[in-house]
Image (cartoon, rainbow over all chains, first blue to last red; front, side, top):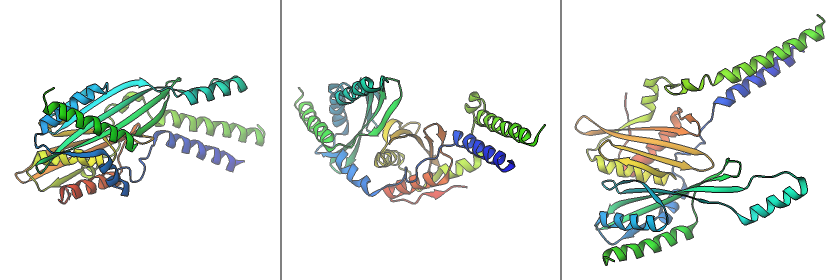
Length: 175
Length: 146
C-alpha cells in the first residue's frame, strides 16, 4: 500500500512538472537538407539594382493581395503584412454534419485564419533578390488553433512571383 | 484507524499534495512578468556571440536571411536599434528576437532570445544551432563571449 501511495505521488509530481515545462523540438533552429530547397522555392532574382523600386512594387502587390501592411523597414529590405480570412472547408463541414447526425455531437470545424507574409529583399551583385514567406494560423468554431504552419506549396510561390513580375513591370512602366 | 483506512487517507493526501504542486508549480501568473528561470549571466552567455565585422547592416540582413532559412517569417526589423523579430509556425509557435550591437571597434555582439509556445527557451543547444547557421551564412566564426 505504501508503494502505491509513493507511485501516486510520483505520477502527480510528474504531471506537476510536465504542466510547466515545454521543450523546444530538437533541430528547430538547425539548418536541414530542405532549407536550401525552401530557399530556392521562396526566392527570385530581379534584374535591377534599385532595391527600393522592387520594394515599392512588392508593397503594391501586398495590397493587391488584400494584406494589411504591418511594418516596413526599407533600409533592411523588409515588408510584413497579414490578413484575416474565412477558413471554412466544405468537406470538413459535411463531415461534421454527418458526425452530428450520427452521434448528436457537434464537432468543431475550421472557421477563420490569419495569413502572414514577409518579404525580404537583398542586393545580389547588380541584381536584387527577393524572398517571400507565408505562414498561417487556423482557428475552429470553438476558437481553438487547429493549424500553425509555414506555407510550402510551390504553386503558391510560383503564382506570387508571377504577379510580382507583373507588378515590377507596371512599376517600371509607371502605370 | 485501521491499516487500510490509514493508507487510503495517505493516498488522498499524496494526491492532494501533487495537485497543490501542480497549482503552485507554475506560481502566480503575475510572477511571469519579470521571471527568468536561468541565472542572468548564464542566459546571456548562451544567447550571445561576437562576430568580427563592422558591417552591421550586412549582419542584420544575414540574421533576417538565416531566420528565413530556418522557416521563420520576419515580423519586424529596425536598423537603428539593430533588432530583428521573427515567428516560426510548425505545429508550434517559436518566436525569436535577435539584436545586434557594436562591441569595441571591430566586433558586433549578436544576442538571440527565443520563446517556444508559452515558455522561454533556456537550453544552450537551440542557440548553438542558430549561431552555427548564422556564422555559416556570414562566413565568420561566432565567438563565445564571457
